[in-house]
Amino acid sequence: MAEPGLRHWRPRGVPGARPRPGPVRDWLDEPGSLTRRLRAQAGGAFRVQVLREYWGRPWPDERRRLGVRAPAWLWIREVRLGTGDQPWIYARSVIPRHSLEGPLRRLRTLGRQPLGALLFGRYPVARGPIEVAPLDASSRLGARARAPGAEPCWARRSVFSIAGRPLLVTEVFLQPLIEELHP
Image 1: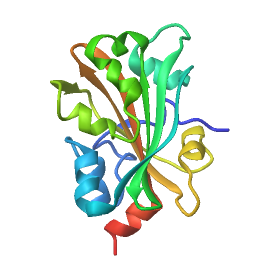
Image 2 (image 1 turned 60 degrees about the horizontal axis):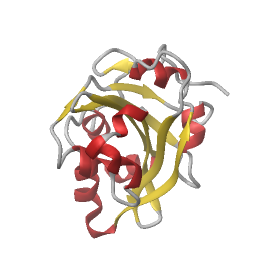
Image 3 (image 1 turned 180 degrees about the vertical axis):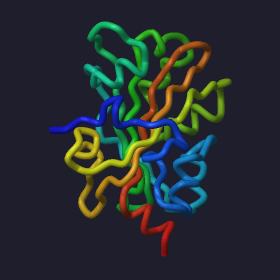
């Protein structure tokens, strides 16, 4: 299966990393909380569906992005965010073990609480550059993100740092959100 590696991810604004004009680009470029924006769009129907939370080996491009040199076990959380049963975003968070020490140990027990609520609420957070990539279901990330009636379209990712402790968040924009934004 093809994998979106470093050659596919592009910093925002680079040719080939720009979706067609309109609301999708605004969402990909969102520097603040995507969760907050999703909640505003969905109203009271906003929902987090936890797919997996586990210790696992990140993909090579995730390891490189986090600066993890050797293969290691990291905390991986995969969720879908959306409205009711309609998924809009697939999110994959990859967190090194040392980032889960101290008060950040809560990251392992979020349950149905969105990670964005913690990242943009309680702690001072620094966000690294946002990278974007067009995505299809033939990539490993696209296959993971795929849901019935919800093909992956675009992805973005960035490394967040909380008290100097990194975590990588990848968000995949699914077709139902694209349709919602382009009535």
